Image 1 (cartoon, rainbow, N blue to C red):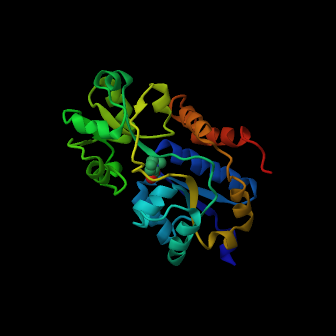
Image 2: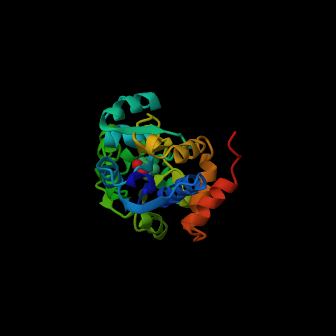
Image 3: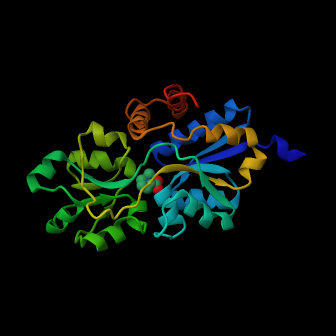
Length: 267
Ligand code: PBE
């Protein structure tokens, strides 16, 4: 039957960590003897999730808070079993927490934070003059700017900024605040401050696999291999891997090999 020779299709979103993780999945699946294709950087969350729903890919790395807020519009759920129950009617599954969270935060330069005494998101309400440069996805998401601004009563009118350019714009002083991902290499490297979310308005964003429910039957060896990625990468390691790709310029495949070599063998 023709299906036997079809490759496992892995997708990713358009930011460094997603590219790296897609190659981690690919490497792990290939080691099980499974043919794999990677559709790297397909687009933002909505685009990659649509590709999964349509059956053009089988699996991609996603984050629990993103699944709950952006894909399911279910801010009330945050555990894996609850997400699984909500996804199953759509033919989708979520599993294999990789061992870290990568959440949203607002970031600024340390000198600006000190000068204006900015520590928390609520502190921003006192400074309408601050210039915010936020990525398009963050500007549009329910778990992004619209909800955040409403919750903390923030008066600024943000401008749209590509996430790949955000840190340079911050360093150059063209904007004062950007949206950061907490495992971004640039946060530590540039000594940026993250404003505390004292009300815990942002959800948790555990890195997990979002997949089509028919994947385990079609690719049992690959699925067994992918499950062994559970808990293999912690947040500081993920930030270091992001730095290898983004700061050192290492190829995503190379970084993926380092990710798997450097972590403890599966138990
Ligand atoms: N992130 C940070 C998430 C949301 C928070 C970029 C990892 C994402 O949906 O891709």
